[in-house]
Image (cartoon, rainbow, N blue to C red; front, top):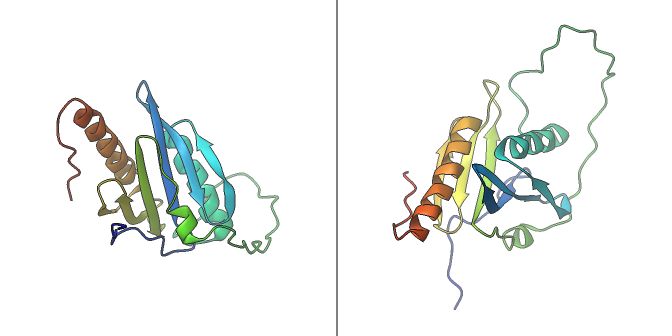
Length: 161
């Protein structure tokens, strides 16, 4: 019998599944998946991961950023209407993706105050927590992966809500 996971859902056009595969020194290395691409998008650290996610959000124009990019240089970019992206992977297919050491579903609901706000679900623990910034989301991921390392040493994983 398959176990029901009440918090396992994508629920947004910009939903992302993060698959953490390994830790090299202090860096978490993994893959991210979204509905608009079948192939994984690999990242070498959490900074690169956030830049890849921000690029997707900009391409989708969802969530729309609350602040515009600032520049004091002349802008030579003419406005172009965003290309509509077509989903090629279903939510069910996305939820089948798993990392070697951890898996997270990220649903960014807002991009305000030059940061992100949303929800993150740690699939292995079936726990969902709201985050108020990119930094807080990264800290939640690092905390979860630290607790996985600790549980390998005999301690129980703990992700505070």
